[in-house]
Length: 285
Ligand code: PAF
Image (cartoon, rainbow, N blue to C red; front, side, top):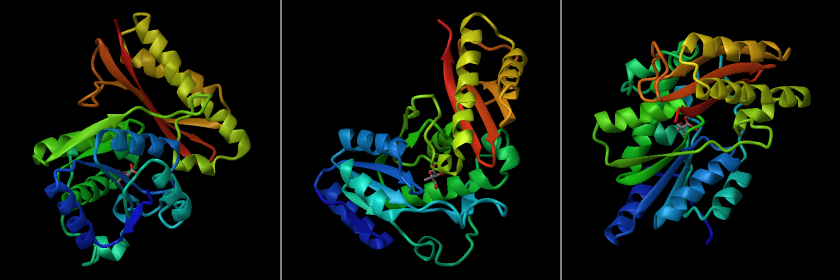
């Protein structure tokens, strides 16, 4: 069926209220567009478990810092619409900045301080409050639903789970596995910025995590040793520069004194200009 594009908040609310009144469940996939197979997997998961699937495309200015790529962020609505249709999305919500923020800069902000100021937050201090604010707003527009987010942005997912619980939002947050290229690189809209040689080098990011996972599965419990192991592998790739690597508790994102049965490996590294992030769950059996 052809996807219906809606850009007004009121019109979307009315349409979804009618679906809910008819007893239909709603699956929601928020995105910033330039959709790829990773987003496709979220839309497929939403369509498989819900009667009506909504995806939003909104490049949210609040989550970009002053020196970040807001104006050059890649956009391709034609391709996004085709992919959404192929994934059985029923409604595509594509609001303008004026529709979302009609009073100019928002005075209200949602922040989850304890989770937001480390890792990605240490170099992007305003990013997670901007993200949490727009996701709260989108969830308030959509209403009761199951909302699908990729594990690729693991810190984002942890923050969303926490504010949805803290604010008792009527939303079931569903985390979906990372979709990877054959060499392990996590799919991301920002991969389009990689030059051909950088694209080859970028495989080191996931390779370093898999190697660290083997180390932990082999018995290593010291997070510092694991971090140094990742740093050594990244150092061996001349085009890559490590920002951070860590073995953290999967919920609090804190580095434990000793790695227990479950941990999450986090990494951010620059490969040329693009800064890539990745993560991997490790369970010791
Ligand atoms: O992950 C993203 O694409 C964005 O952070 C999100 C969740 C759509 C909010 O703008």
